[in-house]
Amino acid sequence: MPADPVPASPPIAVVLAAGKGTRMRSDLPKVLHPLAGEPLAVHVLRSARAAGVAGLVVVVGHGAEQVEAALRPVFADLRFVLQSQQLGTGHAVQCALPAIGEHTGPVLILSGDVPLLRPATLAGLVDACATSGAGLALATFEPADPHGYGRIVRDDHGRIQAIVEERDADAATRAIRECNAGVYCASAELLRSELPTLGRANAQGEIYLTDLVARVAGRGVLTLKVPADEVAGVNTPEQLAALAALLAARAD
Image 1 (cartoon, helix red, strand yellow):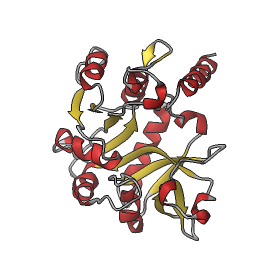
Image 2: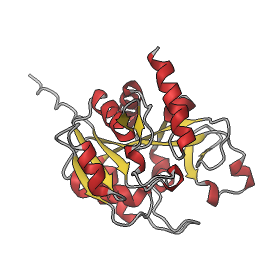
Image 3: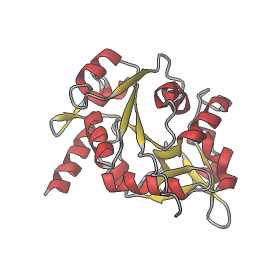
């Protein structure tokens, strides 16, 4: 009789929570600002857990001790990783690689200030990653105003070729409406092999996680288009108030 198939490893999630959040006009770390009575990052962690995530890694930086103290009581099995210098999203995930360890399954990469992601969306991204030839899938959306977002560059067949950050984009690329939502799922193998090779040759001098897309586009990167409201982030008190209204409407 044939051997039973080896079950797929459940996903783990890396939540990026190192930013200061200067535009929040508060000393409180941005991911700890309350939304419906709980810190922003708690909403992200709960969605990840509801999507079947088995392990949670939180990358901290500004106010690291405060963030850890606030989040640890929510999930006792959280692992915290310090990003002492904020050198970009790619660098943040590089810092998390030791915590990922020998994990062989998918890794969701989420932002601690994007609290309205639905578990079904995250599960769909994990499924897309599993069927991607590159071991990489990402969420995209079309905002009312794409200013400030990385643009999704596709070839004539609709296949994603790259994500170009606005500061590095020419006029034609800035005219693209489809944008990067900053929500990814990648195989642990891909992260271990490619992340350490990413450079900082860009307008911000940072290590862009988005550079992974161009690096492996030829193998087949998949995308999942999601509603703009679901991937809305928080950078200002006004945006936080808008998300509170969206969350209240969702609960009705």
